[in-house]
Amino acid sequence: MNVKQYPAVVVHSAADVRAVLAIGLPVTLLSARGAASFAGSAWWRALVSKAREEHPDVAVDDILDCADASGLALSALRLGQRALILEAAAPGWSAVASIAASLGGEVLTHRPAAIDMCRRGEVRRLQDWLQVRTAPDDSGHALS
Image (cartoon, rainbow, N blue to C red; front, side, top):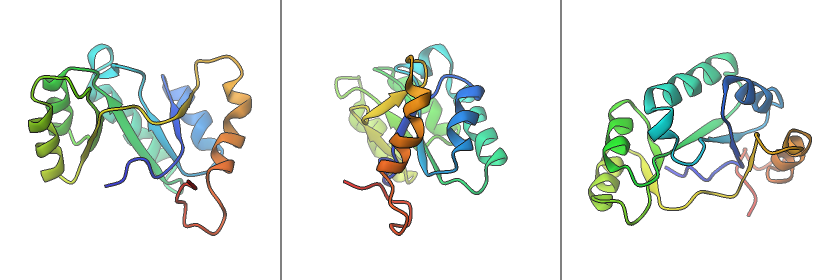
């Protein structure tokens, strides 16, 4: 699994997700830092599932940030989350990464470059952010 395939956008709500997916370009939805701790894995899974249901024609990857909470990362994996961020110093990081890999998932130690929908002006930059990183004939893979 390569969760860094599409340009990343930090989303905080269903409204953010709708704005991002309305553009119709491949994207990686990225949770806020530590979102597993304050919003929860079930909320994130529901948000992403609804997004995919509403926009089945848009290629979407998603990453949930678990900060240093290994237990929450394991819980997210049980709920079907396959791409996580877990700080390298988190207790049991290698065990979580091994479990994720056995499920076809991936655990990242750092957040990918992204724009954040809560920052002023990012909505205006969104289309450029997504277009610049994806060429029409590259099957939706991000340019490096």
